[in-house]
Amino acid sequence: MYKGPFEVAIEQVEDPRIQHPNDVIVRVTSTAICGSDLHMYEGRTAAEPGIVFGHENLGVVEETGEGVTSLSRGDRVVMPFNVACGFCKNCTAGFTGFCLTVNPGFAGGAYGYVAMGPYVGGQAEYVRVPYADFNCLKLPEGTAKETDFVLLADIFPTGYHGNELADVRPGDSVAVYGGGPVGLMAAYSAMLRGASKVFVVDRVAERLQKAREIGAVPVDFTQGSPAEQIKEQTDGQGTDKGIDAVGYQAQAQGEDREEPATVLNSLVETVRPTGALGVPGLYVPRDPGGPDEQAKQGMLMVSIGRLFEKGLRVGTGQCNVKRYNRQLRDMIIEDRAQPSFVVSHELPLDQAPTAYEKFDKRVEGYTKVVLHPHA
Image (cartoon, rainbow, N blue to C red):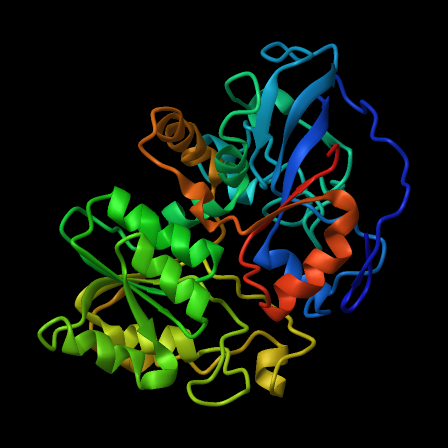
């Protein structure tokens, strides 16, 4: 439970219950801490104390509403972080991240996240899943590949979504800015899609080493302009496509301060004319901790002139997990994908406060944490 900036606590809360015939209750066996949770943890959103975090959830169905038809008690399931109805205009078009039903007045809902509806998060022993026939993805029985499958809730599809937004095709060269879990998933997904060369830009040694291990080219932005470093390795042309997996808390090059638009502007310089940018990295309409008044209002100084001059296309927005999770699940089952290489720690739920602190500070190799409530 979120208590305030830089403080979470383990507290006893009311057990979830069936509220609608289409609900199920899931006993959570794995739930991951996301970089998006850190935005709330740091007080960089409008989140109020009392939110139960957790939008990356996997578990076993404990109870089903009388209207549920495709799920039974004992089914192992993973849920997209998007809560979606399955029948509104956006859901039927495949934009489940922008459901018009589940969060009236706002396009999109999620578990345990500020402004994303009344859905309690899954960093808990149990979670209620609404519209369960639509929102639950069945998994093979047992516990095999647990840390692979839990990543289907968010970061694996989100990394893949970055490639979809950038229209990454076989043979493309791709620059991924950000070597955190989503950035590594974006780089990994680019290679699954047949990219010829993938660069990963970051400054954290463990992240750059992970990028190297999966076959990407690490680029340390503390060693000089990342755009120039990448151009030197692409015959001066830049890459075909670029992905922003950082978002609004980007760090200024060579300085210990935030510069929210720096990744977007670097990508404009990195990607060749007529290329495309995918932006799954989070940007918010209000940032209480923004470095200036414009940033506090979600207004950034983006090089729109260069963007236009180069004829670049841009795709943005959170991932529509349902569009990808079934196919990615099947790749995991057939050993064509093993996204769990990003998981650095598996811990019992009661160690969440320490895990949040260490993950936020990027210490002791904390890159991706999976919590096990029933460990």
